[in-house]
Length: 239
Image 1 (tube, one colour):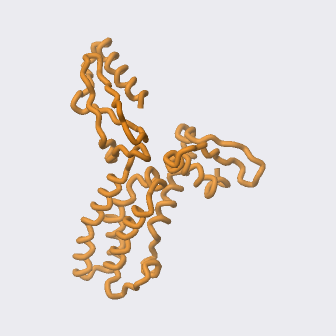
Image 2: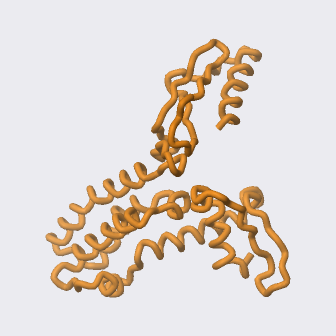
Image 3: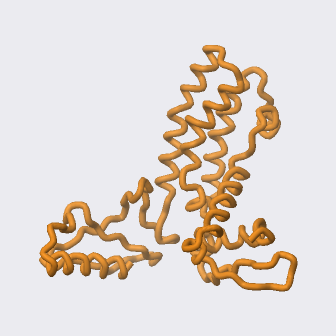
């Protein structure tokens, strides 16, 4: 976080030195604390060269992600995930109207995939590894309801049976596949693959990825260590 603070001040200094027209917008620039301490007695006060103090935020939005401060994790994405779930629920009326109109099951499934499921699969590799069981249940419940709407009177009481009828997968299985697809793209990219450290071994897998050492559960459940584990489990022999 201090690096971000220094970059803000450096940019402010450079714009003054070069007499550039660019200037940091004081109203749109804020600070955010990534801190797992239960009590925060002192909040950092960051200001620019004109002594304008930047406002500290407990919640903020960046690149479409709603992030909030969390006492245990340091940063919490549950607010963003909840909003995604709410957006998906708000689209269920589309399925109900199409069912009433007599649309085929194939088109109902296609509509669900494109108009409803897409909301709960945004930025999956970023937040899927830190999902609590409660959040997993909430997300899966949306698909359960959608499947029952699609099948109507032909639906079974068993959720997995309904998925088999529609040739669909549980959302946790889909999330793992999406994470694997994302990992493959990283490994093929000359620059992005540098976030991982590779080691040579004498096994059939060839190269494997070193899982970063972690002490806290917060870092253990973050994207890089979790993706490293996933690569070793699923993709090591293909690297």
